[in-house]
Image 1: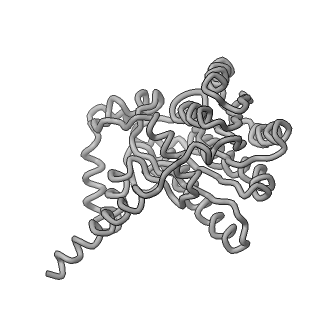
Image 2: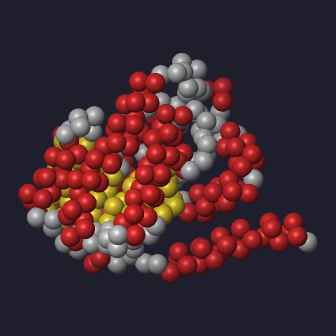
Image 3: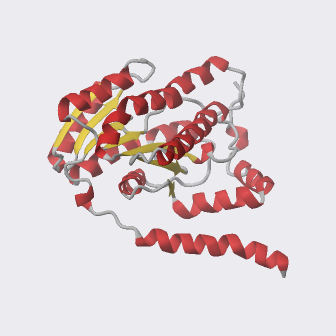
Length: 292
């Protein structure tokens, strides 16, 4: 009987969480005229977030490496009804870019309401081969540039009572094989921004931080990286993008997408970690994974 109760507790908690989650609703007027930066916005989830924000009437500043793609995104945002749309192109490997983007937002609007950190550096899916330089590069782009942009934007966000959305992954919550360098950066994001959230609360600063924990999404990057070795079907990037915006607008502590799949994995992690490890390994077509 005791074992049965132990098994039921997490699932009852999950059902209650789903009920409360379904009560929350995003109203487009919440984002109307809001001033928003979206990084990594030339393709994938970032691009889709820009489009959702546009039809809600937000002011949008997008950034990514490829200027031609950003120009296309800005044009589409204006057609969808954005209050304004601008871009700054460049690589987050440049340590000055994060600050330059925030300065551009201040120049355009005089303030900022929402910072969406979504960019990543290209990586691989294979057995870890000891490439420490690759880890260093990923930490610079996937972690340190997030910190730099946050510190630069915080004065304006404090003034507006704004929000920070940090796009992360299940690879930053539990162990996933073949992505050790990438996983390290996502765990770093979780640790830093969860700690920063606590400090802001202690200081009574009205800036929310939403950590967005994503599963397998159907972006071009994901298809190229894991499509040949991961057999589970991906979730749609358009819906994922909307859920991220919803989580930020409602000032959630953490956002999970797809909710049931991610939350179930996190419950298993806490109750049966070895089973979760085994189940995760079984999602991969191991014979297709490169060793070097």
